[in-house]
Length: 184
Image 1 (tube, rainbow, N blue to C red):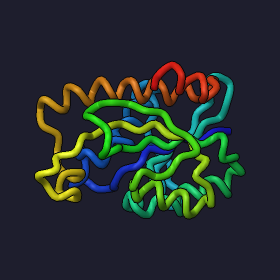
Image 2: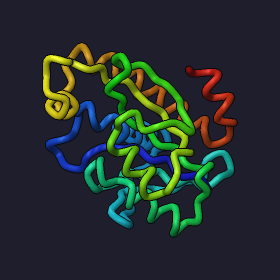
Image 3: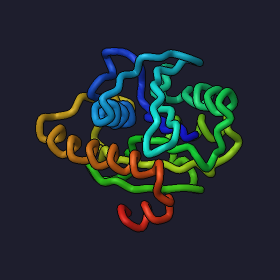
Image 4: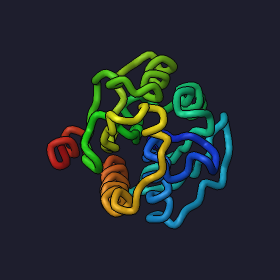
């Protein structure tokens, strides 16, 4: 069993914001699989599906991004999921718009959602897909990450969202080191 988690903030006011990149990728995955987030448990919306012969849980924590670690931990404990079978999809303020990077066994890079997951799982050894959201140094960081996308950005991010969803589905039956070699 594997767990794929997209980080974001719940609520209409956060839809289509830079900080909700993980949720947007998860929505693309659901669309690709013809599924819907129709279950709720441990403050998370999720669906499960058999993909490529393996049961996968697709999760969107419904606590604020910076508090998502408890939700992830509860799913790990309940379903007995190994750390090696977890993939987290997250935005990255320090990468250029739309750039995708796969990482494992590294720091949070200052991302509070990842910090919280690391705290609740007691490890940094969690695989992740990071999607660059750029950084407008003229704006306060909080205002920037919670800002809506411009029309130009939406075009760029749509391609990144589709690619990240493709990579996440490849995670199910592909060695992560091979994925890093292919996509980094």
